[in-house]
Amino acid sequence: MALASLERMREDEPSHLEVLVAAVAFCFDGTHLCLLLVERGAGFELPAVPLKRGKTPTECARAALHEHGLRDSIEMQQVGAFSSDGRGDLDIVLFGVCPPSAPSSGECEDHLERSVEERDSMSASTPRWVPLSSVEDLAPDVRTRVQSALLTLRREARFDRVAFRFLSHEFSLSELQRVFEAILGKSIDVRNFRKKIDALDILVESENKPRGMAYRPPRLFRFDADKFAARLESEGEIRFF
Image (cartoon, rainbow, N blue to C red; front, top):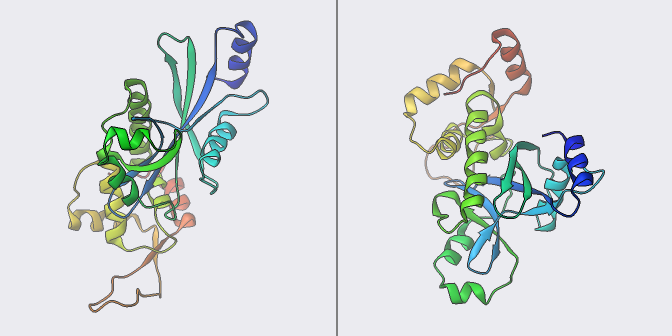
């Protein structure tokens, strides 16, 4: 939905419609795909702020993440607009991929095991990185928005470079495979994965080697944006899986 249309709706029904911009922020902790949630009492919500006049949904989504401690600049993409039953409100949902420096999910995994009473006694608005597979107590409307963002992420990962945004500048093929597996929610055959990546020819091997390993260190690679763009231009589409 265009921002101009939303502004007209707000002007026509200022007392009946509130437009919120919710941000679905994903990160990868090396094993799990994690989601940034705001803890309120015994449940979780997405970081969200009202849509402000003169601001785009992307700017508002970034402001929502910034408000909860995420300072890095994140490329946001709109998922869709959802009505809130019974309230007459509208939520615009965007998602973004956080860099690998995002907080670890370990603290949040421990927190999920606490009792409801313990969680209620904590801050009423605590941001938490939660492994996506561990989230069970989301309200139906929040779950719908997260699932829509996840489907968008999976679609992007099949055809675009989004999976590489979860990784450091240099990474091993095993790390790259774990990212794809976390996004797609399924295991990938190692030989088929490496054959596919080699055939795409969009990586450049680094001269650096991981240190402090007792065994042979893995090779490190960098994503080559120029190679990716050239292949995309020549073939019209790149399909990872």
